[in-house]
Amino acid sequence: MRSVKAGIFAVAGVLLAGGLLAGCSQTTQTGGPPGSPAETAAKTQLGDYVIMSWQSIGMKCTSDNDKYFSFHTPGNDLWAQVIKRGDPPLIVTEGIELTYEAPANHRDPSKTINFWDYAPITLKKEIPKNTGKTGLAADQGQFKLDPVKKAWMAIGIPVSPYNDEGQVDAYPMFSVKAIETATGKLLADTKVAAPVSGELGCYICHGGTPKRDGVGLSDDTARDILADHDKNVGTNLLAEAEAGRPQYCLDCHEANNVGAPGKPNVLSMSAALHGKHAQYMQNGSIETCGMCHPSSAKGQVYCERSVHRGFGMDCQNCHGTLPEHAASVLMKQKDLPAAQESLARLKPYLPEDFEAKARANWINQPDCLSCHTDAHTKASTKTTSYNQWITDKNQLFRFDKSDNGDMMCAACHGSPHMIYPASEALGYSEINYQPKTYQGFAGPIGANGNCTVCHLTEPENKDYHHKNQGQPFVPPAFTNDPGK
Ligand code: HEC
Ligand code: HEC
Ligand code: HEC
Ligand code: HEC
Ligand code: HEC
Ligand code: HEC
Ligand code: HEC
Figure 1 (tube, rainbow, N blue to C red):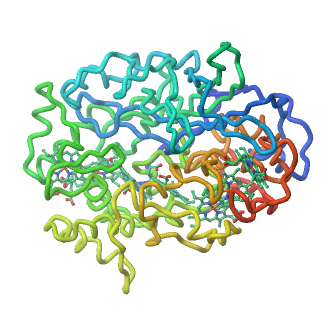
Figure 2 (figure 1 turned 90 degrees about the horizontal axis):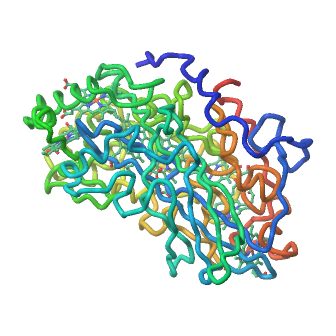
């Protein structure tokens, strides 16, 4: 289990070094210790408009070997709200066009992933090269307005976990521009990460060698996984794949993130994978979850890089240990014999008086306010949000908006698992681009007297978007980051 090669991360520093934020000025009380993401940075002069843009899930994983199987298509969703600064500020929903553009070395994902070769079989749909499932292009395109949310969306941009030269590049920085439709004038621009990762540690147990620097699903690993499935379930997945007919796991296993219904009476993808593996690994640390999710501190991606990691929190603070996490999705299907078998296997690894609340995969997720309380107060690192799932998809942090008005949570706080200030470890120095350029330090946008990122004068009412917005932001030191 501990065989992940230590020191892999040492080569990662070359990735995105040298951003726009050169010339860090002195640390002030609004920033953080030198070298921390919260360190004070050069603030740009704000114009009449500002763009808040984020990615909806913070890190997208993909099996980059569609020749054998596919469960998540390699892509990403960008969101944005455009604000005309004023007293009060105005969320702009008309008269503009919002565009995205990939960085120069991230325009041809078909060079590094084989998704398009197999889409006609896995997704039963011919998809033009370098285009996403919804028709968006990899290199550039336009956002569409969601008039109810007053937010702009570019859903399903195809992004590879590698740049066009084939190097691991998990957080490519896309540029986003707001243009006045009538005049073609540039109103505002910014940058946002579109994170995708192929760092799946399946090889640690299933054998094979990852394609590059610990990232990528090799043919050998994929074959072993399919052979195990065939042996235990009686499927014919390996032979089918070798005959040129790879399967989409979600054809049989339900996954709510993409609305895949799966086959009736088969475990959901989350229940099958987490339930099967929780008998082999029991805690809920970044390293355990990092066997499959790209969160390991010894890896290349370090996907849970939010302010919470800076405070030393683990996956299990929010999601529970792996057996607890699995038990909750298994309870959702508790009438199926396969779920009962899996729950019986996990019993020894669950606390004595334990009861998991049934949880719908991808929907009933942790609630920020189960630790921070309704008043958005400071929390304790001893708290857990396990079993206190949000109940409706629209309450998911990524879709939620403030108590008053229409500003979305993620506009000011960033993506889940990348909540500002996010760790800049492994060379991803531009990850806090928006808060740093808008207010001079990485933190919630508007914190420590910076409501004027959007307002022209500092408002008196500090409880408007939500309670306690005026409380001081205190950045963590990120002492656990690789390289520290
Ligand atoms: C900590 C070790 C470990 C890791 C990491 C791991 N697996 Fe497994 N996996 C196992 C073991 C052990 C089995 C059972 C093998 C057997 O029955 O012969 C298994 C079985 C499976 C099966 C067959 C399930 C069944 O019973 O039908 C699938 C599918 C699978 N793993 C997928 C994956 C994927 C995908 C990843 C990476 C995202 C992964 N595994 C990572 C240890 C691991
Ligand atoms: C043709 C349908 C089908 C496909 C395709 C399929 N599975 Fe399964 N899988 C099943 C069935 C049926 C079971 C048995 C458990 C059940 O009834 O839910 C199962 C079991 C599993 C288990 C073990 C669950 C347990 O508790 O023992 C894992 C893990 C798993 N599948 C992962 C995958 C992955 C990963 C893929 C894609 C490579 C995949 N499956 C593709 C039908 C399928
Ligand atoms: C054996 C590999 C493996 C391990 C270990 C693992 N995951 Fe996952 N996880 C996956 C895969 C693959 C998916 C995508 C499933 C899908 O498509 O629905 C996933 C999906 C998820 C989801 C979204 C679906 C849901 O249930 O809401 C969450 C949340 C999650 N994992 C959290 C965790 C946490 C927390 C840990 C550690 C306690 C962990 N995972 C350990 C492989 C793993
Ligand atoms: C501070 C709490 C917190 C911590 C710590 C945390 N998560 Fe999450 N996680 C969430 C929330 C909240 C969501 C739901 C986000 C949404 O959909 O808006 C989520 C969703 C997910 C998902 C579904 C995909 C997504 O991004 O929405 C996966 C997978 C996941 N978490 C894995 C992990 C892993 C692995 C770790 C540890 C490396 C971890 N999480 C640590 C709060 C947390
Ligand atoms: C498991 C409990 C837990 C969950 C769930 C949780 N947090 Fe936290 N959060 C903490 C703790 C503990 C701290 C560090 C102490 C503090 O500042 O409150 C923290 C710190 C923060 C900070 C830094 C504040 C500062 O002034 O330094 C922000 C911002 C934040 N959380 C936002 C969120 C958001 C947004 C979510 C939901 C996506 C969330 N939290 C979910 C426990 C949690
Ligand atoms: C990212 C942009 C943004 C930031 C930062 C921001 N606001 Fe606002 N604020 C708005 C918008 C937009 C409105 C108009 C209501 C709406 O559409 O949500 C608004 C409205 C308000 C209002 C009601 C109208 C008024 O002007 O009296 C108050 C009060 C307010 N904000 C307080 C604050 C405070 C306090 C802060 C800093 C802690 C803050 N805002 C930071 C965008 C922002
Ligand atoms: C207009 C910008 C803005 C919006 C929109 C916004 N927040 Fe905040 N949030 C802030 C600021 C500024 C703070 C105060 C700084 C702090 O406490 O670290 C804060 C503080 C918090 C905290 C307390 C963190 C701590 O430990 O101190 C949580 C939790 C939180 N917000 C969650 C949310 C959620 C959930 C939403 C959506 C329902 C949301 N925020 C919407 C700007 C915003």
